[in-house]
Image (cartoon, rainbow, N blue to C red):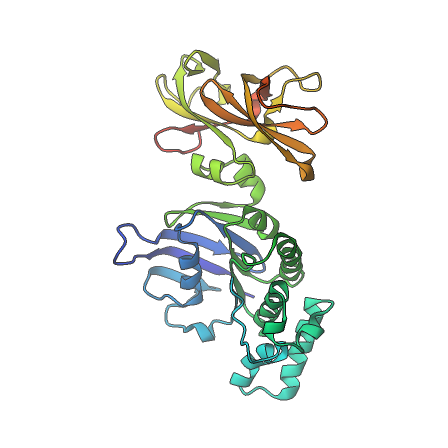
Length: 365
């Protein structure tokens, strides 16, 4: 395994005004998985290609255990790659797909079979049977298992996974995600996992890196991104449901005003903001509760009309979408407490669970 570092990496394409990667600094620690998330066009796949050596037209450094890899071709980087479309050789059995790497390197039959045997043990129950079949006879989930096995069989220093579960249905996606997580953590494989699916990123990443327009907005464990987002973009992007972001707040003599509605400015911010400053207030939906007998009365309150109710059986919660003084808010309510469209409700959030961002820069206050 290896520690991977990107130092001030920039990649520009002639047809684009802005760089695909813009001064990216990122470390993938030895044995850890870093999940890369971001909107379409944020540079996720370009980042993976630069690390793999498939795109060498960049400035900055890509380091494997401190070694600059600019002149090292992809085939010599000891990388295992898994893609969205599986990329298996259709005329080979599963066994042939795994052994092809060793055939190219003229490895002995004994060495090849031993590596395949070890890989089959790693991949678990039923994998041996997949090795006896051609890709065309396998389901999407089975093909992806073979593709993952092919990446692992070479004992890579680094695994690069680019949207590997996108073509699978929901049930297979969950099963395969669990299998990938088990493999990565059991063998402490250094890995970069590119995905648009936050559930995958949260489940698989030891750390999550959020990209936007080629820049790394924040890197850290899930808890850090959820509870201490670096800026309003990260706050609104990470988490399901996303954080409520209320724009239009104005600082006035120790209070935050939203038109006719206001609440006290937290003491910790009074030395950081100035009168007349515009700010954005953020509240996680899970921190915003419908006011009832089981919810403490203290905190910051909003009142609004229910427009949508979304049950979330996995969390035994229903997400209530309310329109409050021109803003849309999402709050959590227990499933056993019926909530109906059209009801007027009061929701409350503890003051310590509010997040504040500068409206001009988006940065956390």
